[in-house]
Image (cartoon, rainbow, N blue to C red; front, side, top):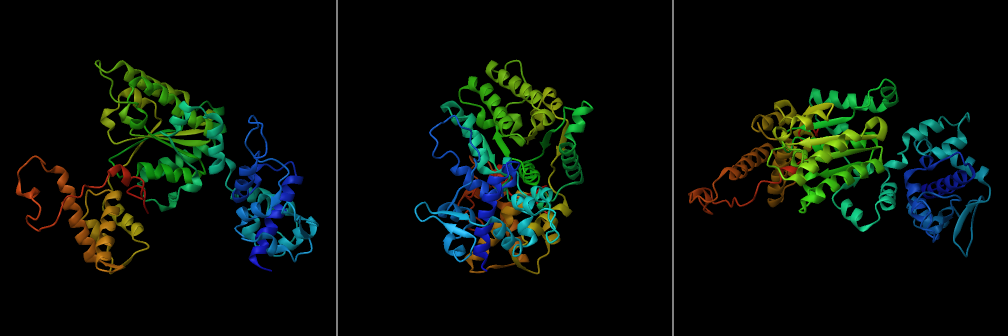
Length: 467
């Protein structure tokens, strides 16, 4: 029997079992099935007050089966099976003999298929011929709060007026399924690894922490130069924990109308609480929580106070929100801001060994003749992980101009030299009449390219975020 038939029968079985067993919930459906049923839930219901979700019975049609399984013609794949049927008028697919269908499926499905479908795992748990449990399958299945469809429906439900819709334009929410990097992909310092391990333990044992009165936990400040991996590590942590990632740059929510800033700060924290459990990542933390001066604008003072109060009021133990702040300018934070965080994690520029490891990761899918990462690490002191990625990008593009897809060590060394030359432009006095600014002087190269945005580099696997 074809793989297509197995896909469609699994989907029909899941729909049938989920409909009949009311003890099952949305976390018992594989994410690919939740998506199609959630999208169709309430489509024919004119009552806007009905909550979004997955409603029973789960009805399977040709089109729904096609979306869920990727099989172009679902009925053709199963039409010769004696336990299936199709209603010509509605296109509905169903099982005439569910028990026979279950036996047929179990005899053909491997362990990986069974252990990622909690609905079917529960139906076969305890059988001698099946080594899978419902609990194990639930652990292997992404929870509902990590699904994009759940995130979008929740945001639409709670933030549906015009003002709130504008607020969501300032806040970027990623589902963990949309984050590609994992903690295993990262090159971390010993201190970074230790803090992440402690945080994961705090999440695992948060009920115990609440019992002993340790509620002020799970608020972390990442400190370090641009490009050292603060954003990347935060996203990877969201992927690892299976949590939505709520990202905001404080400079974005500092409205041109200064009086709106405090309100925007409050709404940012409200978004996180609605999506909990989640990670709230506040980048450019220093843009509002800067050292307060006597001549500071009153509206900005209100915004700072609102930010500090919002941090006080949010809790991993109570709200299931992990708060991570990030700053490139710790000197601009006052003592009141520092006190809000129970952990401070340093993100320094990578040392020699880290640079070599980062280079190995960046190049793991590249063809490089006689590649010596230590040799490149030796001549890139002071470069961040994002800088190293830019170096490799330059080397690849230069090789492509020569119709080559294989790089050499010399290509990388030349790219390092070119990067340093372009980087030096940042230090030139652009009002000077120096001959260095004249096109064609010295080597005749056009050095008009600006150094890439360092903040953008933090979205890559960079120092502290590449292994």
